[in-house]
Image 1 (cartoon, one colour):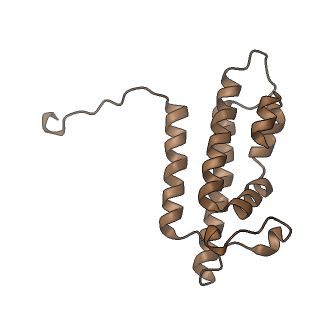
Image 2 (tube, rainbow, N blue to C red):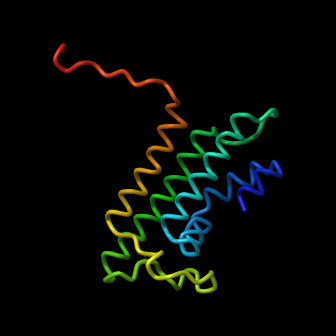
Length: 145
């Protein structure tokens, strides 16, 4: 859905959707953690680029703020899934939240510590790539200090 919004130049609506915790949780429930995070990152990065390249002045938050806010809500959903996994012996995502959502396998909704760490890394890499940019990192030689 966010992809279609971007194609239709509905940037403001896309910003709202990608920062909506219920949309994020529903996406996780229907797609599973890994696929939902991958798709969300892809959508947020596309939105980020669209906002940077907008030819008209938009009455919106800064692209960096939109990206960070969306990822913070995604992190909260991942933490929630991890907490549910830890406290309920593998029953990971509260099915009562989305009883009418598309059915997925139980494995898709597992959020183990390893998966949570992998997903957090994916978000951090995306933030670093977009917000810090492609500036080369300069490392000093520790032996010369």
